Image (cartoon, rainbow, N blue to C red; front, side, top):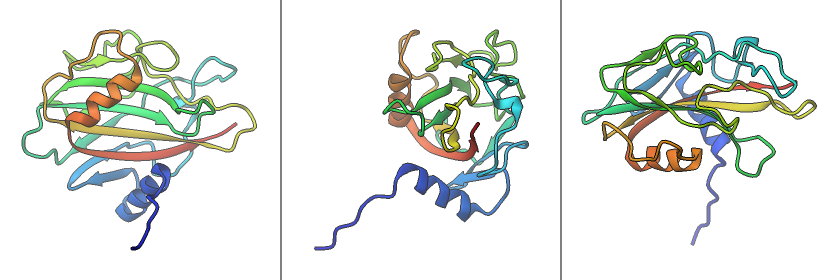
Length: 191
């Protein structure tokens, strides 16, 4: 009997990005994510760096678009996750869900706390910064650069069934339970 070890999440994502070979794009079975200002494995700019916790950045979510959603898609969700945070469970930087199926892009700054650039009906979940808004990169000074995984999910439901004060883990569970496809791009940042 042959035993194999699964690839770590980051390595699997790196292989996917490398296999895609297109700067700024990643796809899963035809479903593709594009971040016009962020290339896979590139370093985030100051625009996506948090403003607080000792970091001074623009704290703006990047513009993004997606295409090729599979049949049966009824809504989308977007997350940004740092699997390298020294917490034992990573760090959720953004959770946006219940994005209507007719929306296929978000402008830069859509994750602002006031939500004025969000599509009607979209909901921002509480991040590990404790707020329902995009929170930029801010790894501890001296750590190796952290990975920031930007993911869009095509979901089989119009709305995920989570309470208004749901934790990031609860939202993540609902997204994975209802996904038809997902596409990710990983960038890095260190200080």
